[in-house]
Image (cartoon, rainbow, N blue to C red; front, side, top):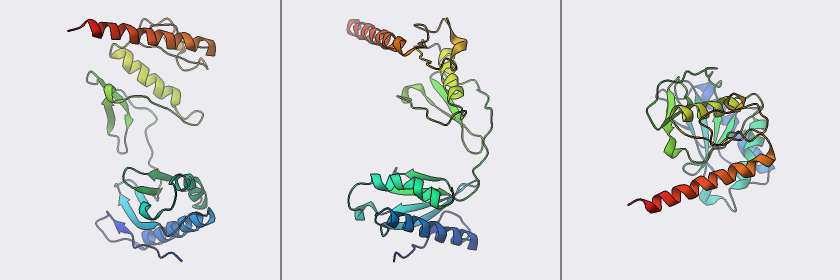
Length: 225
């Protein structure tokens, strides 16, 4: 039988009975789920309760040095752990080590609409954080971006925000829109380097145009001092 670690806390006051009970429940369910999936349950190293003021998150920290084999099966266990916790949100935190992050409090409400302020050149606003603080980053650090989500979760709205901010910053764009519902308002827009690709057959031409621009820039760099 695995012994439950004593949870540490970033709360200044000591743990309440409710928090202790939740920690015990999460530990028990996580251990039993790992065992049911034929994974090691004795690798749970410690529990850490973090309070942000608006959220309580319990981290179940695994000792990866004791795990035999790969970590992928533990990552795949996340969904089953959430199911066994009656739908409590469970995420993977692997910035340092490997941890299951379980949200103990009610998910915070986020605004349905966020006004775009006047941003500094080269900056992109991607949304707001908990507490309403604006989140912005430099376009140069964006790199490749995947925007997944359920139907009506706001993917198209977010993509339009990126595109409108890019146009506002003077960028020229190549866009594809197979469902023809994300960028219909940008048809024949002067910021487009080519018509919006609305069919799968149009995409090779879009890629070819992008590669041509890469070649042009390569030649310009070669001609520069």
